[in-house]
Image 1 (cartoon, rainbow, N blue to C red):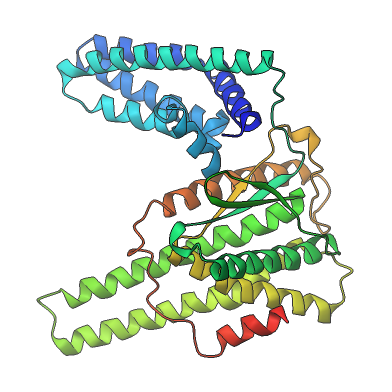
Image 2 (cartoon, helix red, strand yellow):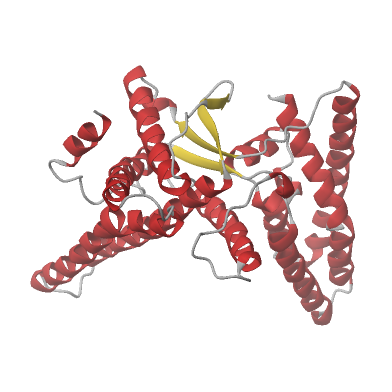
Length: 373
């Protein structure tokens, strides 16, 4: 495990523990349950709800990326911080009345033990002169599952990833910079590149829209399956309903290949020649097809925000009206948080549920190959 990154995780845990007064909040919830009456149960529920809102808004750990959450899980802290903490407390709160206090006490004891160990480990690393990992740019990574880990598949996925980043770079920066792999995760096929804020925003915008459309397609596909199993419908009616749903799927597919790539134009530099701008958007369009297939195959994308915001040059869109900068930065931070959460929830789904209800049309793969020439 990367000790510099581990130290950053441990510092984040300590920050959350102190700034959110986690132990005090848990104790408050426990005290309400201890009243053992309806008013107490309602007060506990209200306290937990308020604590959850505070976690979502202020917690560093609640916004952890996929890679950070994996590291937190590796050291045994997933249930004690962030989303895992809230989920654990919610699960305990619906236990039988006589079990709630016992479970809270057991949880608090185990959590206190973990917190003490993590503090000690943090101090030990600092004494060894280990430096906290503090990149001054966002990290964008691609994670390949072992099932696609052949040399050919690794090369193809990395090439698609590189061309997507390169097209976005030129659109939003006005130039294409060398894309270097800045970090590899030991024991897995995780490749990360460092990119400036504006590139990370554009990639996140694409991913957030891709997830929304994917979810829509998955639900439509589910509707087809449910229609087939509906015993009260005639075969003619089933066929008619399925045709309507399939048309909606095609419309959603069109969103992926045509409309979503154009959303990046609001981040594009204004001085890029229109012809070149169209070429770059088309390259993004082609590489989003690859990303669409990544979701199905289990290839993951991870975006890790920086910790110290004042180290990051925050670039606002060129057409942003004066006075809207603060609002834009707030909305962007929320976009990162929401997209990271959506991506992680999506990757929890079994691969069979992520199966596309259609194949890429003939000729699309050839377009991909031509774009690489």
